[in-house]
Image (cartoon, rainbow, N blue to C red):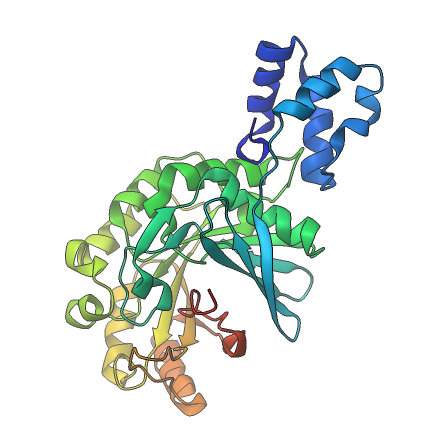
Length: 340
């Protein structure tokens, strides 16, 4: 019984089927592990007169979030490396915000998208993460590293929509009120533009969850060079999928644009990007490229960031300039995988 891969209702059904018990005991076990991080949950009052049940559950229970084997810090930012049961390693990042921490979660070991500016893409796809390996990152952040996490971004290693079923299961578990209790509006799924995944996500009943799209170039030629996924689903196809996506009232997409010196940073690129965005409701994160050794891309200057941003603002685009965090510990966008 791999507890980190179960919603509360799934656990209740196991209790009913296998142990002749119900929600009372299931909620107690779920609360102790997910709410309190208790790795010895059977001392809870609900099990005080159920010794045989507690012993049976103790033998059946699997709590396997993976072992945190390394930690890197830059100020209040923390990157941690988890070794999985097969020896593979993944990276997760805890980013401090004004009132809470955001956890950047990985969904795969490596990535098959092959973005040419990304260290994880250079790894290729090793394998998808199982549900408990995704939720285990939140368990470790909260209870191994003692970091209060309120916000989840699926922006770590891998393409979340390429591991669709397991990521959706992890979303439901993280959202469970009796457990981790992360509100859907505090979760963001990022994609390189995997249109079939966007279309499947549109059919899920996940009101409030945010969709972030890595754009990184406003024309197909440049984007296909940076992001091979664009060859299968070019910008026009991507925009059609987004125009059909059921946003909540006053909802917006989050676009991510990594500014790369001499590649996608000209005034003409800004004009094309604004034209592509209209009339979609978009908040655009403008992020300076984090140089990765051997990939040949350079970061823009602060002045170039400001100029590109101003071009977009003049075209009516809502721009958020993101200054790099975690670059010194390879925790920035495009750097995950270098510390393995």
